[in-house]
Image: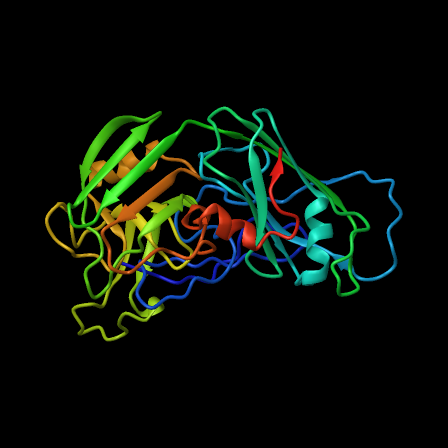
Length: 328
């Protein structure tokens, strides 16, 4: 099932808004920044940052502003969660090294990590391997006076602190119709699932949970599957217990069209669980927990299609870093 929504996000740093995309795949493109509500109640994905007092002189010129920082300040997230910063306007390639050097990450457990520019407006930080549970992470974005290469300058310093929670990892075997949920390396539960068909396949690869929503309205027309109400592929449904994996719209959820999964390929790219299992999974996982899907013909989700940063190798990640790897 799927839907693309254009809903105003809750996390705005500068008065700008976030646009969310929700769907089960189809022909939807992965655009936007972390989604907020897509129906029902949504957990926070990014948040407003309170500027820190700064005594640095501010150069004259237009301000370089941030749209969002994820995860939210004070949150607890999973081991695959990146730090994701979205600027309101593009940062020039020539200025990115200087910007990175003012995005200071500190941790309670030392790690090797790096920033990666997906575009001029989005830069993410991830460790070389998953975060260790219990790690305290702080981002000090000391951007006051920092140029963006286009004549704009940072006017604020921002600080976000968050904690890495338990090591909860999920694997989805598409041809085996099976999901396995692990915590700290131990198998917690095995669940029957159905994923996408050959016509509407699921994404492969590792996707960190973006957010969770109690209900999502899913429309086939919104993602280019079908707008014909007489088509067997048409749907307009509000479905419960939705764990959000990609901006293009991949979810783990319950479907009324596939209430007893484990034997078919009935979805349009999402992963279906039974009602009881969907609620259990919704309650068990958190933002940033990695979910790895294998056996689908679609290929890996792009690393910026949500928080799929671990779909890139470490060398691929470093290739788009202006300042390179760092010990934090």
